Length: 212
Image: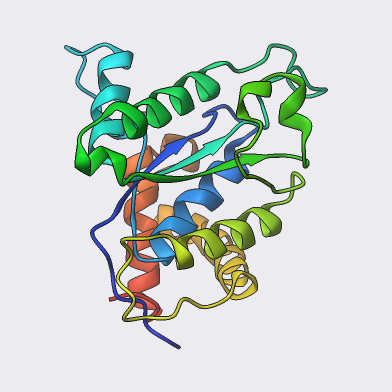
């Protein structure tokens, strides 16, 4: 299997953390790691002495890349209240790029939604920005992210990433193996923290020879 050399690029993940979105969140974290980058989100920092806003600001400052999914930012059938954290944090990220120093101006991001042009109904100020759709399908989401990560500036160009279909296939295989990995470590699935999940993804990809 082709190996992927790790990069030090941190990727800020700005998405919902609820159960209805979890399958997408898990796939995003897996894809970011499989593509050689470091996933970072609000779940990474557990410092109770800092407000959530302070944590987000710190993450935005330190991450040159960002993934922002707006697919839950308007009422839907499986969720009644729109999730406004995602547009808010996207605004912080774009503001850092617009008004920050040279390192901040080099930021790059991908904005996601469930369907093309749906975002125009609730955040028309994004008109002119490219928004990618994942059609509420994990396979499409992984394919879109792989394409973005493969072409994003700042990613060392010494390796070619496998295609989105291959990464999706690996993700499905990993999810099948995850319960056994949890049992081996004596962790119940519902007890898995974000850190636990990231550890399992990295360890499994290394064991399969996919990453170095």
